[in-house]
Image (cartoon, rainbow, N blue to C red):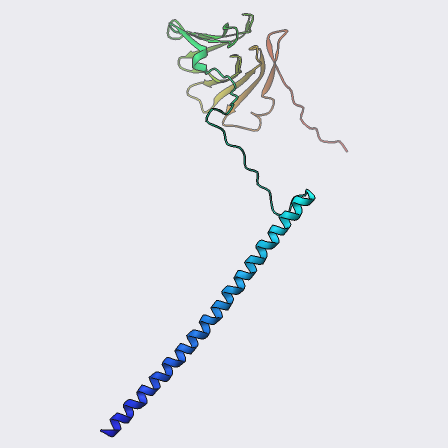
Length: 234
């Protein structure tokens, strides 16, 4: 019985010593954390004081400090409204008028006809597309057709005054491995400028010498020639 009592006392003393040692360790760590916290507070206080001193010195000298400046814009009051400048562009649908089957595009300022599209009267006949300048003179004509082969004109872009700027003419010869496109550009008075003929599939020969300019005096296209480089004779 005495042996059990001695063993019990030994265990009790050992646990007490271990607990005291843990308490001492905890108090040491807590003290170290407090010192670190106080050190950080002092550093932050010094940094804030240094920034305040720099701002004060900059204000006295009239120069900007190393800190970036941020300007706060005045907000609009309830009665003020932002001024937004919008360029007036009239949609193509508002510039187009359909009279039975005839379609007309108008100049935006004078309301005169810029382009008139007259449909064919019967199958196999051609659709007439006429381009007019602001004075009402015909500047260019194009014909579409839909039979065993097809030619169709697409208006891809207009000038702000309502004149045509760019059209693409699609030619499907039918039963062929090739198809063709012709791109024509116009000035603001509907006068043709340039024509580019494209053959698909594309080939190197097909994209050489495929541009023409409009000869206004003779009312015809003139092909732009590109000279090939010749080998230098030795």
